[in-house]
Each structure stands twice: as C-alpha cells, then as structure tokens.
Length: 213
Ligand SMILES: [Zn+2]
Ligand SMILES: [Zn+2]
Image 1 (cartoon, rainbow, N blue to C red):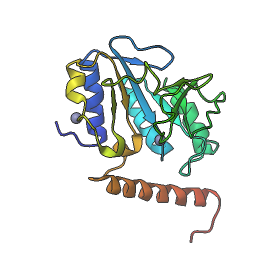
Image 2: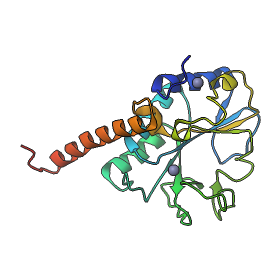
Image 3: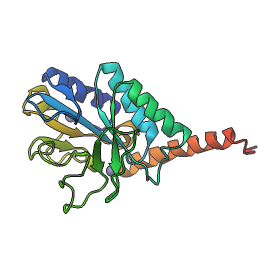
Image 4: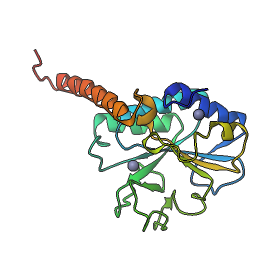
C-alpha cells in the first residue's frame, strides 16, 4: 500500500477504519471507545468537499464538514455553496462552521460545532459559548488526533493503526483538497486545484452570458 494523497488511498484509509471496527461519530456525542470523528476543514474548494463526500456516501461513511463563511476561495452563499450544503446533508454528513477567530457566528446552516481556521495556541482549545470547539477536551486528546495538514502526517499515515484498532478512539482531520487534486507536492496539488478553478470560472462566465468567442 502506498501512502500517497489520492482518492485511492483515501478509500484504503476508510476501509482500514472499518477493518479496525471503528464507528463514525459526530461531535454532538462525547468520545466513546471505538469512535472515529472524521473531520474535514474545507479551506479552499467546495468541489473537492463534494467529491470526498460522494466517496464517503458510497461507502456508508459519515463525516463532519467544516465550511467557511469568510473564505477568499469560495462563497457559501453562491449557487454552488447552497447546493453543497443541501448535498452534504442529503448524504448524511454533519456540517459545522470553519470559523475565523474571534467570530464563531453560527446560524441554521450549521450544527453547534466549530473548528477554528489556522488557530493560534492561545485560543485553540478554549471553550466557545454555545458551541462545541472540536479542539477542546475531550474531543482533542493528545495521541488520539491525526491530521494531514500540508500533506504531512506528523506521526505517519494512520492506516495501519486504524486497521489494527490501535487507537482507543480518534479525531482524524482530512483536508479534501489534498486528496482530490493530483500532485506529488503541496505546490503541485495546489496548481491542479487552480487549474480546476480556472475551468470552473470559465463555465461561470459562460453561464453569465459573457462573450468568450
Ligand atoms: Zn497510508
Ligand atoms: Zn482551515
């Protein structure tokens, strides 16, 4: 098994979690042995989020998608944004707010759960009034958290440990863009994403009846 950042290996990761006997959990329930909190911070691309969500839906996997309301890269109030919210819910996923500190402004699009975007250590684990902060205890517990940030697993790809049931429970943070777009480095993956966004933008221009002849 090669630990690349591809949809193929993502499917293998999910299969490993099934082999290990884990249960797909959401942040409205405190961790129990065997729980797997599959968390997606959507920083850059709703299209990537939808693609990952489709794969999970096919496999019967339930995740929590954290979406931004103040991203420079997508607009949750756009046509695509509203459709993404509907589709994620239809596939059974939970949706939380990927908030930019200090604004944790939840509305009825979101469950009462937030994940801070690029948090500083000073507030990352502090309680948030009226919401679950995914990085507060017990949801964040040393040794029971893995993240793929910038294509770098600090403690290695977790597929072996998942298959072996080695974690009592786990919060697993996966950024959809890293797995959906192709590339051998973060730079190449981002270039692939930007190529896709360029094609999408051309489609939006055509839909807006811009003369592209
Ligand atoms: Zn792996
Ligand atoms: Zn983020």
